Image (cartoon, rainbow, N blue to C red):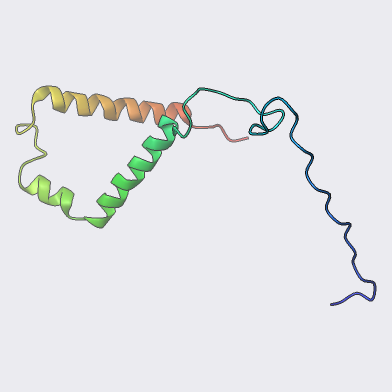
Length: 105
């Protein structure tokens, strides 16, 4: 729906010139750092990789059953250190999941 009154906007003013002394390449108030740029936090990387792992498991629904059928997941086919390591990680993950839960308000 159009209005009977035209909408007028003021013209833009040109940006101020750069201050002398820095060559005009760095805007005033900017911070210069030698810290590496573009590194993604480890938590974000792990979240993305676990998403891909779960997507691969969804794409191959019979992969677990086939591995179990071939005996690859039995305790006898795995080294005992690996089997206990998997059990320990699963236990720590289960405990961490209960600890991290938020109480209802």
